[in-house]
Image 1: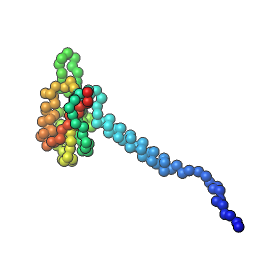
Image 2: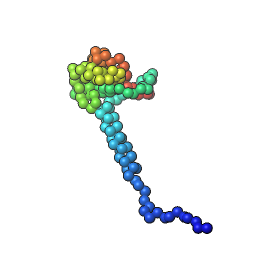
Image 3: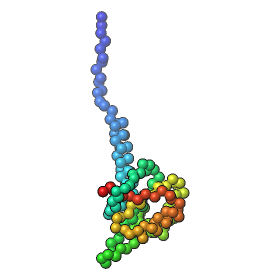
Image 4: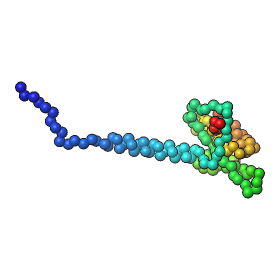
Length: 146
């Protein structure tokens, strides 16, 4: 009886093309996510501490507004803070129009306000008034646990 064995492969190599494709897609994904995260948050904002807070479960359709303090040369005097949205500085007068446009595009828009702990409420109140004028009813204040 004659046994038929497996013929040895002449060309023994592993096709790594699909692996390279997947790695390239992952690299692009992480670059994009990192870029978006960098634009959404501004360095230099000291997030206030809050013992009683809830985490957000649904993070879709969110807009992050950063309120960054300006330091004055005179001690104890606080200047009007800077407002940043998606990595661009926005004037307070233009914020209402920007919020109304985003609310039309995304009816379930959630606003996250990242304000420095040193900023007085008198500078936060006009931002909240613009949110109310735009019809945004879901406003969250970013805080950190103690």
